Image 1 (tube, rainbow, N blue to C red):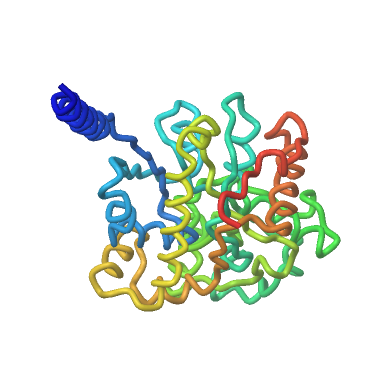
Image 2 (cartoon, rainbow, N blue to C red; image 1 turned 45 degrees about the horizontal axis):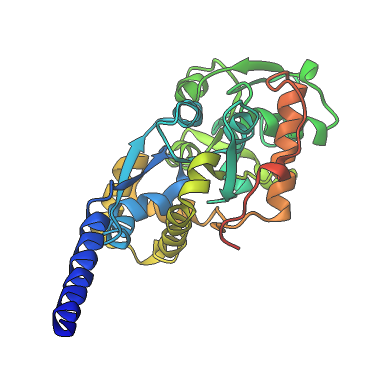
Length: 320
């Protein structure tokens, strides 16, 4: 009788262990939907994608990686708010905009900052426009409500000018090159990779760079708060692999460089030079917080945000 009990007990243990294993294997896979846009600030995330770093890391963890391509930050905000994306890489303006919405979001890191990724460009043959001191009376075009707009404001303040001293023209980023080529404006305020692309084509010159002001050019990893609570370890791994990709920038093989070239519409050599304009940091610094708070101030000032709020309350530094 005792012998029978022992056999039955261990048999039950085996059945229980098998059942638990099958239950674990049959769990619904977790997905992480990553929204990305073709900005030079996010070169490392494209490396993560093209090198399959996350897919390799999540291979035995029942986690699916879904890459979502967007052309700019506002559509990413819409996707995050609609719970179609879980994490997005966006610039400072869309970051502080989506944080003020009704769907709780968190900044979990800073993929890059880079003041000199922003510049004011004039035509190369315009001898009357050589620095921001020459802005008075000129037609300046940029995207209304963008970091370029904020940069323009800072350049005017630096030179004791106001918007009444220039003709401000609102354009889309896609219209910048044509606006400058066609003499529609005297200068455009734009960001990478557009800056390098237009300079290398020979018809534009830099008359002011972001570092001439207190502009920082802070970008952000923004995550839905609900997703962060449920899958913090997934977000931690995304940031970890991003940090690994940063270390790979200078040693990329030709295949990955070519894919980056296609995605960003610049040459492999331009990728290497542009990447040097950024600080790829991951964690959120005090300077980043101050930069984002300044963006809140700017957007309230131009009435694109209803009220000032504390950015620090929206930050969860996942990787320190």
